Length: 352
Length: 175
Ligand SMILES: [Zn+2]
Ligand SMILES: [Zn+2]
Image (cartoon, rainbow over all chains, first blue to last red; front, side):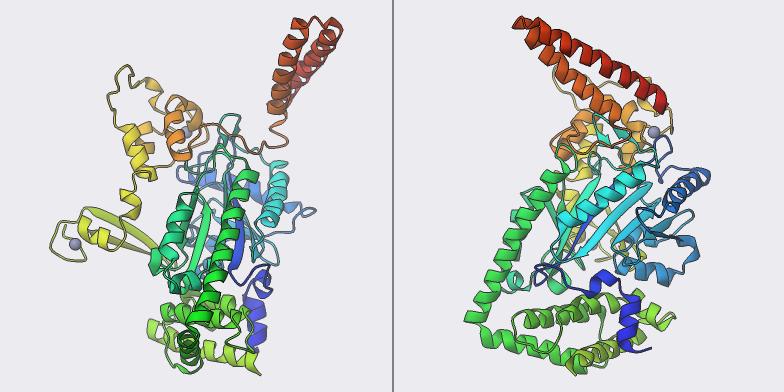
């Protein structure tokens, strides 16, 4: 199989096309937590009750008129397969641990995924490339209506949708964007931004690593509050803050280009060179260098490389994914060699 | 147990991390945990577990008593409020009913509100929507009566009756 075919086969279809404002916003996600009335939450359900939940959701999904979702029983997957699913955000780290009567249903393009028996009975999410939070909510809301027509959701007039953890109760909604902020980081403005954002009812965390140490300058920003605000208000707030972040990030990128163009170009081209020629590469190093290269592409310093290389390789070079592609368990050193080879090959693919 | 980072001080912080699907457990002293940034969550006065701890501690407030009743266990899943405090998760949707009298304060501190204002599910929410409508109409009826608009009042009364009949049907129908 050619590398192009492999990428097309292995990555979610949505990842292959860039979305709006994708120079800063890598992806947008909206997740809803739902539970079935009366049955204890997964942390307390007996195997029999967990099975009941699994079967009820399975039955609901059999009706393919509205959503054509394919259900997979996690206990039938290997650990490598589960890890790879987590690495492309189809399931959560907690779900990737596997277990009995845990499942995930997803659409063919992998935009939609429904986790069964995660922290709540149902965690439905819609994931889009670029900045499209509203669109993601529109779809997940339709999916929610569809599921609710088949299942008896735990809902109280006072507290809204009832969830295992009270931090999710109410809308049960977590809306988030994944942003790439190399400009703010290089200009030493990241701490300020993170503090500002957390004062606005939003949570920021590094996608790989925490705080200013976040590898690859990738951050996930999501709503903290789920109760007492409507879905629209929550999304509106996230959108407005994200717009401000996009504006700031672009501003600092331009400033850097104006004031430190040679330093910046040197840094970016060195990272590019390492990615093109290194023989061994850890996932931390890969994420860091890829972030530089993506910035170089966005600023026109690196030409003839598609911006998408970044999001593709970030996923493909994760430990679980590498092993899935190779179809076997690899020692860390072997992984570093395969990772470097894959990156070299992928970057050359776009050059020709 | 000694801290796994410095090997000197006693470990007081238990950190569980899941990276690439692999769970790693670390026992650190407070100082090392702080340096490694693991305490950010725990020391945040608004963090969820601190909120819980604060609420579960029977603080003495003047003029306020902390009620401990036999409603301390959820009838549906047998989870106790103390257990909820330990694991930070409810056992089932009924827990919200059972522990209702203690939830307001907790939810207000997490969310700044204890009242859902968002989406109401279509099918299940029909009764709720009808109840809301009835409440609105009753207010309107009062105003109409006060203004001596009796024709309008009679009209509103009929609509309320009709909605009440429908809401009873809904309740029964959903069982
Ligand atoms: Zn220590
Ligand atoms: Zn319960």
